[in-house]
Length: 105
Image (cartoon, rainbow, N blue to C red):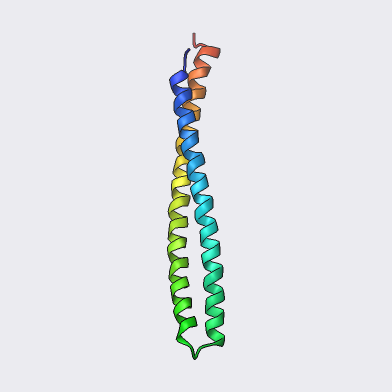
């Protein structure tokens, strides 16, 4: 069957994009949770400044939120690159199919 290699390549790239998209969704959710926990701990630290525990929790959760933000950014880049790859593979597949639907004379 003509163009089956192009179709298979597109399917592989689409699967890679779907996986990258799921990773981004997970990283995004992790970032939101870490940010909310950090905000809560830092707000509590403001009210209980005389204890070191809340300040330490604020610093720790703030660092966790920063790491989560970096991971979210990396996942977004991976997702965008995977999307571009699958779109290019899709266009290659369509161009191949077009040669058989409308052969050039």
